[in-house]
Every structure is written in C-alpha cells, then in structure tokens.
Length: 122
Image (cartoon, rainbow, N blue to C red; front, side, top):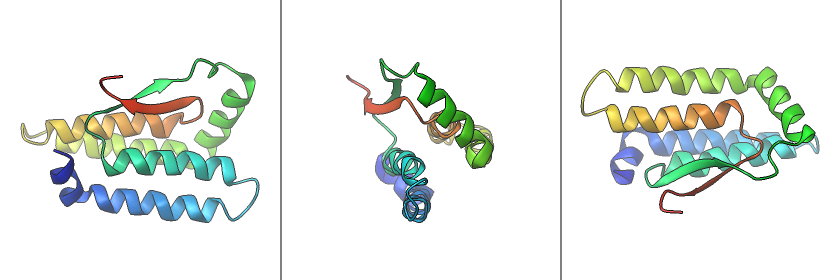
C-alpha cells in the first residue's frame, strides 16, 4: 500500500513538507516548526504501518503554546486540506485506506507538538 500511496501523490506531499521544513528552518524561531513539518513529511512518505501517539510529557505548557501558534500560523489550513482529501478519497471503496491515512495526517497537522510517530505494532 505504501508503494501505491507514493505513486498516487504521497511523494509530492512529502516533497512539499520537506521544502516547507527547509524554508522554516532558515530562521531560528522557525526551527521547531520545521522539525514538526519534517515529522509530517516522514509520515507522508510511508503512512501505512505507522501511528501517531502522544508523548508522555506532551501535557506541558510549551507544547500547548507551540500548538496554538502552529494552528494560528497555518496548521489549520494543512489539516483542512488533508481532511478534504480524506473525504474525497473515502467516496470510493478503493480510496478508503488512503482517506484514512489523510485523516491521520490531518490529526497530526492540527497539533504536531507533543506527538511522535511509531510503528503500528509498537
């Protein structure tokens, strides 16, 4: 499924996240945001067999502040685009697995701070 994902747009999503990550890392203030988009690019590259979990220390004040800044500075639009693609893909039976992956990316794109990506068997 990951190979099919790559052929049907996953590689373009990953490249888009990588470019955005590199652009954000130009400034010192943007480095934490660039790291989060790098996290999303790795999930966008091969989302099948991975899941997003909250870190044990994710309830901190810094994660909350960074997530609020992230949402206000564009995270909501990234999340809504993944949500839209997920809904469109779930219209067909064949697209349902890909739509579910977009929903996973939408959840991560909304609040990426305090989360990590692990193998689904972990």
